[in-house]
Length: 93
Image (cartoon, rainbow, N blue to C red; front, top):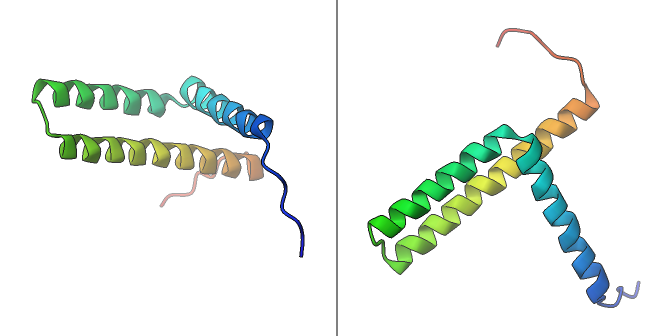
């Protein structure tokens, strides 16, 4: 049985650096991410304005997280597909 690697705070910090670098790329290069971010801010302001309950805040934060996660997954799949086959396919659907 293989011995698992010991915990390293340095490696954990480095993994967060990579994650934040990926978010910077997302915001810099994916224009739809700005639309999602603007919508999230608008929802947050509306939540404050309408004094939503703590449970409603939890739901809002979860849904915003799901939308952003979906955008990240979609962008990564698009980039992977572009990497595999860069030319465009103009077939009608």
